[in-house]
Image 1 (tube, one colour):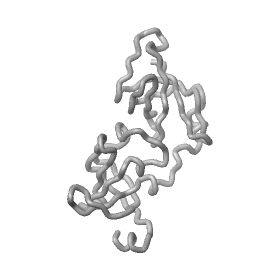
Image 2 (cartoon, rainbow, N blue to C red):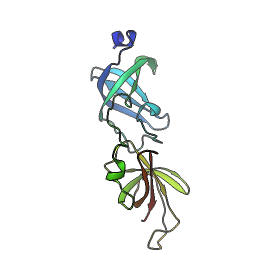
Image 3 (cartoon, helix red, strand yellow):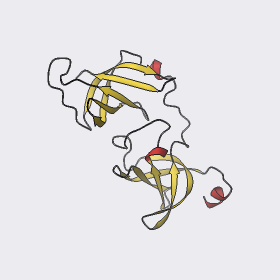
Image 4 (cartoon, rainbow, N blue to C red):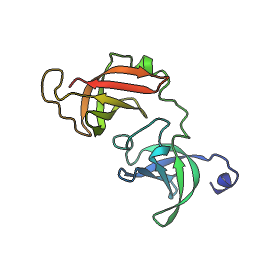
Length: 171
């Protein structure tokens, strides 16, 4: 790692998630399974905007990272890492074919901001959908949105070029 950093070379390695700090917006990892500590800030997680690590990553997940630089992690030697630089897949590629307008999808609420929330579609990684909702569902029942809960929604805007994915909650 040190030689790669000195030579400005990318050092890509697999890591295991050991702690997710939602409040501080960072993930702690064990680099290469040898006890080296690494930290991934929220901004280095994905090539797309994500509002939180909630329901995105779990302790024990194995993820690739690029080591960026040295740092101190709780008074110990460690490294700042980037997952977004280590992944080759563009989650937006082909999104309009996978989730065409009118698709009904299951969405887990990640962050609520009345009258919208941001959520994850099951099976779609690294993209959050912005969801609009009303006080009542499509059947007239009260609709109470809670973080961590799943809702059924319909895609009403999907654009790979503009990197937008929006849904309205049905129930």
